[in-house]
Length: 550
Image (tube, rainbow, N blue to C red):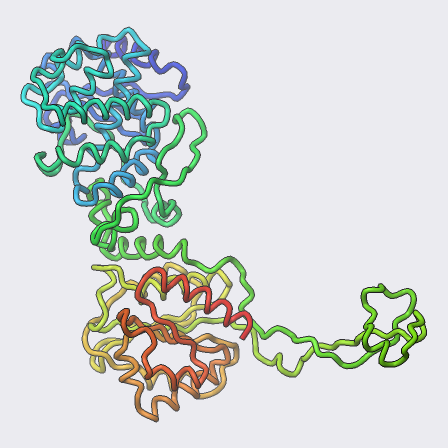
């Protein structure tokens, strides 16, 4: 214990510029303790949230690394003081890697740790008198994999060592070029630890094809105890930063490098709630399928929301020309109606023959009540995809409109509908965001039958406060509403809701405005196709304009 305390004191002195207090590292020895702390395969591990460093004593002794205890502790302290230094930076490094390597989600924590090790060891080699070269020679794998060959050769380049000092074999020319590029990226990123991470990920891709899954390392970085991710997933930037400054300074948020889009890699490398769920599971977090679904759609909806407090209420008052009044000398000259004045007299005498126009507001048309509620009828039948398995554009549009309405101070009611024998899930009007999102993430499946009885019951008479109706489905809804009886019901409901109505349909690209929509548009229904994120952006602009100036 005394030797451990002395080595820890020397290791902390390397990072003396950081005043953070870190407890004495734990030297784990018994199998029960290793199992408790999850050190079965790790040489050492650091918990970012608690600042606790864990050392696997039996493995350190078995591999002959005990003389390098100070180097090991200085390296682990580098995770706390230098890179990543906080769980925020560690999380964003995982997001950047997921953007470039969405097919290797289970290996992302190990890759992030490998990148952090390169930066830390490069920094230690140039700021201390530690025997880092001896430690790397002892610690290097005897039979390195393709990825490790590139990393070990990069260490030789960064530390200006002759070839063969750490890696005992000669690399082919293309791997040698990768190692030199990796060393360049590490050198240029030594003060901005997220700057070169995307390039590092691309350099690792060819070697990862020959690595076991998931990729395992001999030491790692943890967040410590589990924590609630809902807030982080909700308020985190939809695009991770490409770089940030040293952890000792304030963390600026920069625009990320764009990743190549593919059929399976989308927003933050997660095109669906399932990818979103697997990403966090690979990071060691426990999320239910519904929690991942809610977090996915909430985060996807954030950049699409309507601006805060856009006036969506009554028609604007139109000024009407009533006639003319005399223009007097104490009135601004720009108010003179010159043509009207010349009509009265060919000679202009200010204050005697000059007139000004008199305007009034048209209050007769301004009879609509301010909209106070949004009533959503969402098709959750088997004709639409399960929102928990794939990105559902109808569900995303419902989430965007529901959250926008809540931000306006409206109340929201959700009605999920399916076949005649399937359960109908509905809520009363509420301003509870979690309740709204929880219901929108549900899926009923089954046949498709529009709840005309429920709509008729709710809007048999004019509503006491204006409510905007929102029907969301696919082309099958037009077929279901083709009868004259249901068309009459929709017309009556639209009038009694007193806040207008919108019809959003998930349609293929070749059928963006079907002819069956025209009768509903003549009634006053607003129609828009929702089959992509761009469609939802256009929908929000068009709907906001309609609600503001209808």
